[in-house]
Image: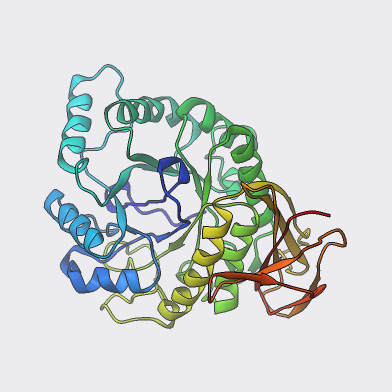
Length: 391
């Protein structure tokens, strides 16, 4: 299961083209704790190529939330706030409506606000009440996202979904809550091997996302804790590139700052920023992965995800093969992201035989150029974006 941190200690965020965004979203869980709240710390967040900031897992006051929003504004970012007055349902309660009105009054006019955090990993039994809150916030403040994060596929192993299948869980969420985004978390890498349902989770969420026309985001592993191992840069890149290939609109990292002060349930190591404020090697690794992810994502966010073909992982999630995500842009061109699903070994990806007038995208320069290559070398977990205009 995902690491559970009490809701009072959480704020999570994401972005969506449905909310006027033209850029892919990179974000995280667990922002700088309140005692580290400063302009310098949010400049550091921005320098790691994040577009959306989040509040600390230890929580912070309304005034501190507003300071965070100021720092985000000054650095060209936005944020989703977590506020202790948030409710999980309305149910005819005037007090609950008053709480929501007060939250909107405090934050809605701030130019850096992206949205409001509602709940993390709810079971299906909570959907009715959350749907009431989402509808109320949408009516009163339609410009900002009401954010909820869903359970992963392996929630079924703990009987917490509230539905018979994971597909039913995600569909029920969309039908009842009517969210602006489908967000879920899936932590793939354990000491005992890789989860076998990583692609299944992506496939299920993508399918519902396409059918319901609701964008999706993936929260992926960064921090070593419980049974989750310390990740290499290739493993981190694997998480981001596979999400892109499946048409995701945002990648969020768990976690940016170490939750060690606010959560004693695990030994937390190798967050991007350590408990004392120093940088872990993961900071620079994810900074590089984010830069590439944003460059690719800003091209793909303009497009419709039309198909994806992924390798079938064996027992223990053994990696290998190529994931091919296909997209259509507004000009009718075909785009394909070829992502190496092997984070240990390089491979070669073959360009589709019917791809004519081929162009390749360079994430470093953010430019397209003609390409005659029909076999593309891919480093471990690397990806290459192609496009063509006709047969």
